[in-house]
Length: 101
Image 1 (spheres, rainbow, N blue to C red):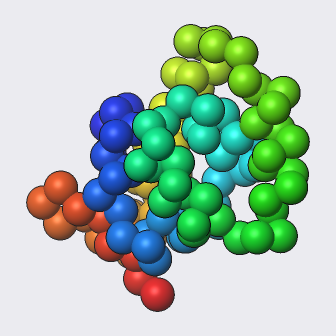
Image 2: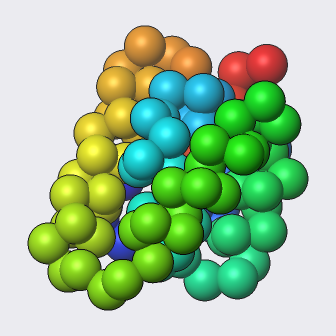
């Protein structure tokens, strides 16, 4: 995955759940503040509900635009996706990412 977060639109539900399970709450919060509404809706649908309050609280604190933090999130997500592909938890086929349930 390159650093373009719009690729998150091409994750299936299982793939997104796996990605979110491996992603720290502060990164998810920042991610939710910078992605488009389609990706945001998918993330809210896939995130573990026990983490929702923590992520929402962090989102409020991370609401200010900060290009440096945004770039850190891009790199973190790309790194996590790369590791998940390497371990076989995610499959990347053409433009799509599929999670192994």
